[in-house]
Image 1 (cartoon, one colour):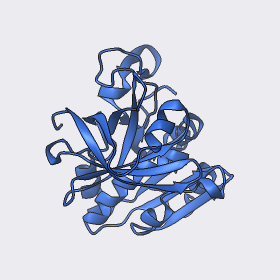
Image 2 (tube, rainbow, N blue to C red):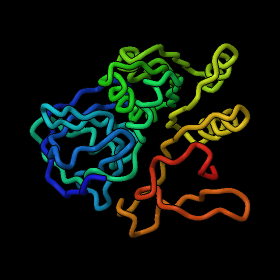
Image 3 (cartoon, rainbow, N blue to C red):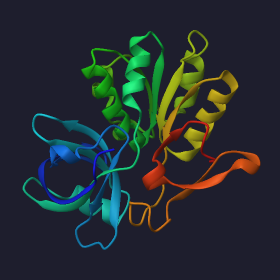
Image 4 (tube, rainbow, N blue to C red):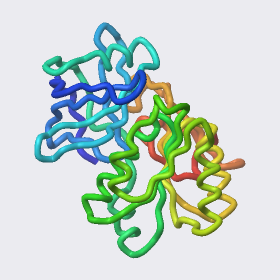
Length: 257
């Protein structure tokens, strides 16, 4: 894991990509670049606590990290309101991400892997998909959104493989229908808890492995405050783990949702 740095980052660009949703590019040192599944802990203007925002991409040539921010409250609204030339304090990179090296090896060997995202949860999956595309491989995606005005990332995902988009419905319904003809070896998922819980059941019933990125409220972002603890394991073997440091990516069957 790369060493976390605390830096003043310059906003390189900002654009609205969906209703209440903004994509920002930030200048981040190459030695602290995030990887798929990791996040940036950003100090929102005028706020004391930082906000964890998943990385949705990183350009090695320009040193630009990409994030997608949904206006869900005072902090995220302040971050999405930043413009080119503004500066913001952030910690990067944080958390354990998707094991992309082994995932890419699996795809190259012929294994079928799906991406499954719900709402803003599609953002970190864009980063995973771009890594697969950079390796000249393909990956299929299933994404769901509340309505047409909330759709993000479909074009980018389409550059990496087939995309199934569910608007106003359940992404897991589309996945279940697709499994009537082909069952994936693994699934990478990120989205709201009900969606992740449903994907856990789908995977358990079919012996599918994979990884999911979990969202939790965070304080420090580095594992000290224990605000973001989640429960992992089953039965008498469960334990508490920190989403910010031990995650946010866990094995798809690990977390008790």
